[in-house]
Amino acid sequence: MTFISIQKNLGIPKYKQIIACIEKAIATKQLKKDDRLPSINKVCMAFSLSRDTVLLAYDELKKRGIIYAILGKGYYVKSTEIAMKHRVFLLFDELNIFKEDLYNSILKHLGDSVQVDIFFHHFNPNVFRKLIEDGHGNYTRYIIMPTNLAEAPAIIKTLPADEVFILDQTNSELQAYPAVYQNFVRDMFDALVAAKVKLSQYEKLVLIFPGFREPLGMKEGFIRFCLDFNFKYEIIAEFNGRDILHKEVFIIPNDRDLVSVIEKSKTQNLKLGLDFGVISYNDTPLKKVVENGITTISTRFEKMGEIIAKMLLENRKEQIENPSQLIWRNSL
Image 1 (cartoon, rainbow, N blue to C red):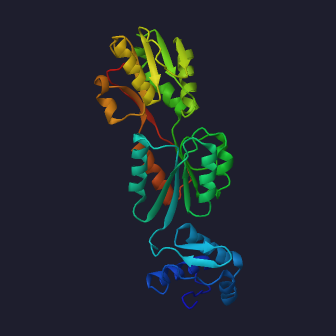
Image 2: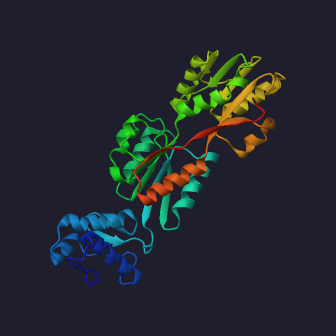
Image 3: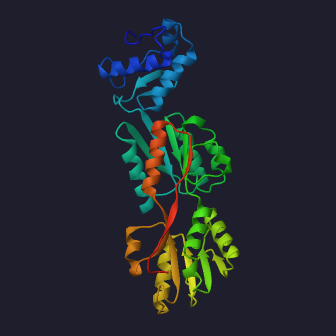
């Protein structure tokens, strides 16, 4: 235990002095991978420290992935990568092209001194719970996409409150947590307002909204717009090969439904942007060229990743709305 030393009146908390001593011992190879650390009781007795002080130091090192614990045996060196200041638990709903952009942006702006482990819950509350339970206590920060899972707030609240950041969707039960999120009600409403002149040339707006994965705010914003501006509208759970009526506009959050609508229009010999219209959600490079361009409502996922990364590194406790925009193309 010669590598641990505690100095009084140094102005540095004693638990941080323990962490610094262990980091230095690893850097100078006094401690190697799988070496056993002094027990909590031994450190307490040697330096007249409380058990909580030593446990705080060991827990911090454990969250950073530097040490690990074996129940009934003690703590051991897990990694010699002491430069890692944070070990981040990143929980996404699913991986798609926009989430890939978001993930890459987070990695880029967190930098090399942060380790990120990514997981996916696929909108399954049991998977969501299991992943968070397994990750509890093993990370310094948690970035979580709760989507619209009703169980999510209660599960998230089992984690240390000052270590959690919410991403993409939030709600009233998660207001205490810092977040970078989309305001789906406002985004949908404002985008349709921006398109109102062109939409008035059509006879009916149709929102394809399965309601399983899609944020509920999209539906609320759509209905509010239609009622406020007296547009005839319909909400359907699935397209399912129905006929496209002349002068309908489809608002389509899911790309699978977008493909189905375009395929059906070809069997009916309808021209997109003339006989009927489409507004898609979340922009991709492909939507710039498909059918001479698909109009989209989209946020900047790269910017969202940059903001959440900076909030984490600077430990800023804010709630920031990541704005969306309507991207005009020939489908409307």
